[in-house]
Length: 495
Image 1 (cartoon, one colour):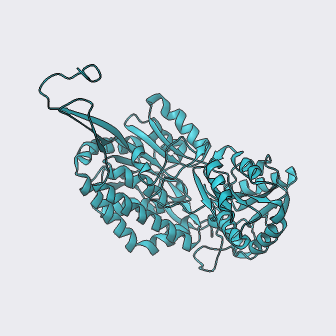
Image 2: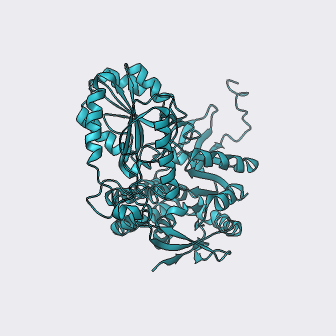
Image 3: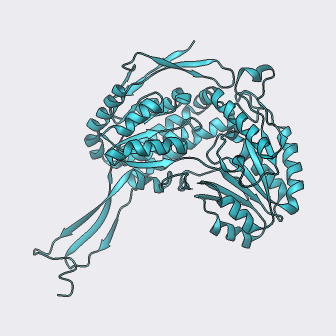
């Protein structure tokens, strides 16, 4: 029986002022997971006010104490890892081994950011004047709105919430409606870990109402968003009148380059994992394969053989390789892009259909799909599909491969397979993406390193690693003059 899941405002679990709910659905079976409260702008205002009230006390809490709460949250996540992974698979569909990895990523981020409670380093530097001390420290920003997607319902909230909190900010969290229940678990965990009331608040509901209200709320200083480029652009417009800070992590059209000296078995492993892991529903998914012509035919043969062996099904089955896509709308979008690819003249090699037989017909399953004879300018080679579809593009040279890789609106992740160290270093220099992999697929980020992209993928900020600290803090420069008389910087130098 479905249960009700509420907002969390000022330390209490409360229903929305609307009294309305929406249903979270298992994309593999179509069954209801639970009823979730449907928030209004009034709920958003209450959450933002609670966060604003809690800010002064929280920022004054010693950073090591803040870090200890986040560390305890990581310990709770460890204990509940299997339970949370199974809930995640039921609510958004990714296969269970990937769901465990999603929870592990939240655990890793909790442990890493907990350490920043004792490490969020500023710096000291010599002053240009005598008897004067100079240093720079980090200050929290204030109330942060964290708006997260459904494809990583615990990892990405952890990426945003943990660094924001350890630096002394307070947070209003709006997860995707598609994974409202799973994402809310991070709030339960932090509550159990001892987070004070008002420091973290949760509002459930769609971006068109809840997300927009957060972007417009004057008490919110920073909006940290992960999702589509279209929604990110709209949030930027809505936040502009209040001159809010924005950290946007958006779309991708990532490519794997396979050169003629590559280990093809290794390349195929990387392509299959990158293209069809999470049913292609990752911002780092490999939706293009750029291959030198000398090895094109062999690589295509190997890819088609491997793809035909992939097993679709409910992700709770440990033998399943590919789970469902998130919902009916996404299923229809993928189907439209397959038709577009065929109309553009691309050759469908495998897949290309909604899976409707037997138990698969109850959910939102799409066959892993490969196109060949794709031109770089085709829509299926330019636009983000966000499904288990990849396009093979043949090239003659490394320079051409790099140009094709860079010739899209997005710039998140890229990969190259080669045994030639000179070619590898040339690619690392010339690929204009935020992430570059050598002899690995386009997915596999690690939480202690910056994550983000160029062009339409983002707005210059990075998540994870110490780069996240720059998003959720601002620099304060401090001067202490102990000379006992007026010293005028620049003017009195040498006098």
